[in-house]
Amino acid sequence: MALDVVSRDSYSISMKHFKKLLSIPVILAVLLPFLLIAPNIGLDFTERMPLAANVANILLPLSVYAFIFSLWKRVGIMTLLMIPMMCFAGFQIVLLYLYGGSIIGVDMFLNVATTNATEVGELLGNLLNAIGLILILYLPVLILAVISICRKQYLSHEFIKKYRRVSCIALVISILITAGCCIGVKGYSITTHLFPANIFKNLGLAFERVDRLEKYKEVSRDYKYNAISQRPDSVAEVYVMVVGETSRGDNWQLGGYDRDTNPRLSQTDGIVYFPLALTQSNTTHKSVPMIISDLDATSFDDIDSHKSIITAFKEAGYHTYFLSNQRRNRSYTEFFSNEADSVYYLPDHEDGLTFDHELVEIMKPIVNDTVYKKKFIILHTYGSHFNYRDRYPDGFSHFTPDDVPDANLANRDKLINAFDNSIRYIDNYLSEAIGVLDSLDCPSSLIYAADHGEDIFDDSRHRFLHASPIPTSYQLHVPLLVWISGELADLMPDAVNSLKNNSATTVSSTLSMFHTISTLAGLKMPSLDENLSLTSPHLTPYSFKYVSDRNECLELEDLNLPEIDKKRLSKFNFYQQ
Image (cartoon, rainbow, N blue to C red; front, side, top):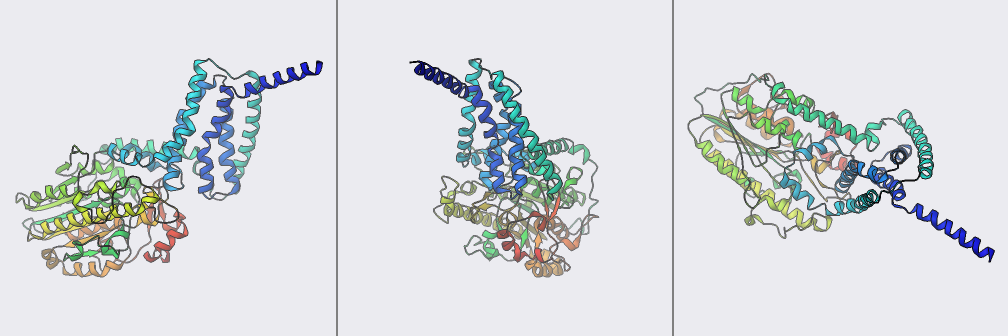
């Protein structure tokens, strides 16, 4: 009987301790630190860091989170205060889902701030799996936190004391490991390799760039190109620069693609296509400003003191136009567009879809207007930006099926069909724009390049979209073409011959566009380097440069691209420079 009483008492004590361990405050204090390091675990698998760095990337944040939860008995409130960290962790998980690696970069924070609502809706609709995982991870603990607060539950002093002791021991060990990495691992730094310290660094840089954006108008006010035209004012001339969006050089028939994605341009006289063109950035808010200014990877961080090519043409006596199918987003591209004499952004339609051909329709009366003899026009298109099926009307569904319910590997064939159809649509409106210019009987030219490419589940990495902190070869390879009218060809026969001779040369779109169209227009200015023009007889392959997430100018080798990308880029001859 006595043994039974002792047994029942022991059981009661055990159950009491077990219930304490299963109490909501204890669950929150123990579980949430582990949930918050979910992205750290993922990054350890994707970032190819040394073992010590992997251990530090998990143990230091885990011990810090645990120590924080040991500071206050109101763990429910503490959980709610950790919502920002859950958001950062969720953001990182989405990034891992999209790109299979890399931390949240400065550009990713800026993309969130500058992407319009339509693009956000299109993207979120195809991230349901990642969003679902985030909700599974963090929504239950938020619910438990609210319950704990409502019930006025606390951590016991006994638990706090033990928990703090364990977390402090782990914190000391993790600090020693991290210090060892800083000393003994080449290239290691906390603000680069330790999550979330690295994203806090990037977030700070993003705020700095936003501050620079706010001061742009003042800082750039006095910038001048000191451009002049070498041709008489009486000579009518029209030059059109078309900035594409997310079009891959791999999918252009003009570059050797085995599908007829350029049925009209391939039959158009006067076009010179450059199949070996790479962009210096895989993000719109960097590549577009470089395309339409004298900036490149070596000088991009000076962007807040520069103006665009629009100002150069204005100084040379041209009437300037900026026509866009994008949306205003308080980016440098928008600030550059405001330099034009006439600025027009396509309005949203009721169905939310606007097609790039509308820009050509607006361009037609502009080029035929006789009020201004010299005209410079920039068309900023939507191109092949995801969702691809929304970039072209129904009549352009040449490759079918192209209805894409979800963006995933299983639907890759449909995604490629839709993407290729979007390029056929680009082919259509570019050829029509060229036809309009060709009918003018005056020197004219059209130059086109996409800002960057795109991943579409192309290889075993199953990568999708663009703007990843580490680019892929698919994101770097872009289409680039130049069309010259017969009148301009007669005016610059040597330039036309050089253009054709250079077509097999490895070039950078973001470096070439400014210098090429300025040379074709006969402009002279201090920042113009005619040897960088695609029309130069002295154009030779040059060392590739890339603007990193933190605006550093990197050589291609510094990107540490996987072998699969190096192999694809070997034809560009950059690795042999």
